[in-house]
Length: 426
Image 1 (cartoon, rainbow, N blue to C red):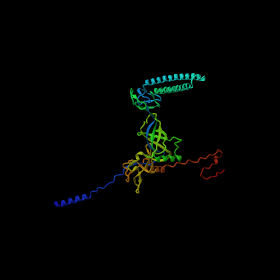
Image 2 (cartoon, rainbow, N blue to C red; image 1 turned 30 degrees about the vertical axis):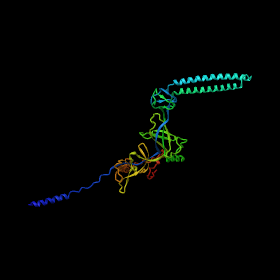
Image 3 (cartoon, rainbow, N blue to C red; image 1 turned 90 degrees about the vertical axis):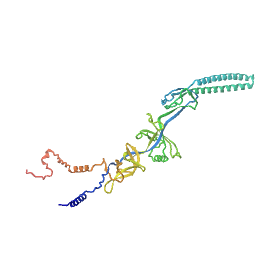
């Protein structure tokens, strides 16, 4: 029998052997993340340039009183669309009617004085022929007639002015458009040329003002000289406009005014475009995006908008490339972006049509690390192998035997193809 001491040492030995046989924990590298890649697509696209502009009414009129008086009537509701020549305000006309009546009375008085002066001059002229009246009296009568004629003209002018003042008591719309709120209530005294009654604006069409830079203007001028753009002096330049919540540029218009020269303080020049606005979607004072086309369609590469990232360096995409071990490695490239068209972004510089751009899994695709690239448009290798196997094992179609046409008279002389001719005894 073994003693207790021997059994103790045997137990320690067995424990040591057991520990020595336990496998060590080894690090297993996790599989690389899976991403979806796609090749840039070539499309024929018209190059464009975009500006930020502000809308403004195509015409604005401040309605002011041309005579002083008490406001008697308001002929519209605030915010109405009014027609041209519609009555908007009426100032109490009674004082001006009285002035017109007085002016007409003065005109009649002046005409009566003219008739008297003409009669006196006629009598004096007759008497002067017989020297029955002094020469001086003839001169006085002539002067009185001239004075009477002048008084008639002055009275006629006073009547005209009184009639004008009376007409000014009715304020009419000088154009069709949308009128704002009335700024003076009925019963208040309005002062000639000082009191602002309301503001009338024409909103259809509507203007959009924007400011291209000097470099943009020089670029346009060069393209016009080279025949890449039509001359805006003879052909209106088409433009498109979009609001902040619009996708794309749904409003179409054209360049209406070009300011000559560049502002030295800002290095920009003013341009004004006009856009139809029948549904009044556009209101004055809105910030808008304006797009202009540059020449004809040219081939451009486009990728999905979701494939583009951005940081302090600029815009970038992540591309999957092969390393020396034929592994898929992520590479980051800065790109120059063009316009957005139907969810796809034009890439002007940074990628080519053979690149595999990450379109899904952009956050997992870290530059310099491996990934499993999945290209949905690529043909799977197993499908290629199956196609090759099917091509190799497909049965070869039998060739149809050659058909020979013969006439009944010579049918007995026909020898089958590829057989030796035999002579038959007579």
